Image (cartoon, rainbow, N blue to C red):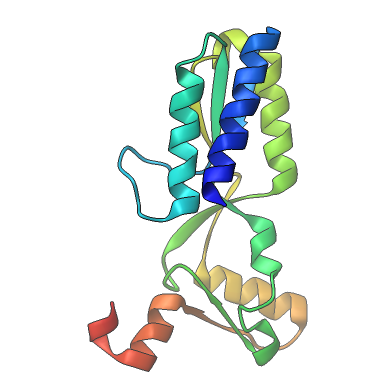
Length: 162
């Protein structure tokens, strides 16, 4: 499946270059780095980015952080009076709303001279687990406790799992 992502991404980039597209904007991911992570869906993106950089097309790579919309997905135990997510309770994380990605992309498309050839990390808010606890408590009108995944693992397996 991730090889398909690379195939599709590079094929679209090739078509953009062959068609004379004035400015290609590729939405990658904030977790992309110099070294492979071993996570196929993360490792597909730098391969596409490298391919785009080798093409004769002006391109901008945007790397959005975690989507705010993920906060409302099932499976984070909100229906059980708690919320379990990635960071520790006092650790902050950056988020971006999907609509904001579109707004950032519009600005980037409108200014090829400024953004062409650049990689831009996109984030629109920073929040902690404790702040999520307060927000969900207010929104649901019932107490919600927050726990980072690390805390859940410690409760289940002790220090040896972290």
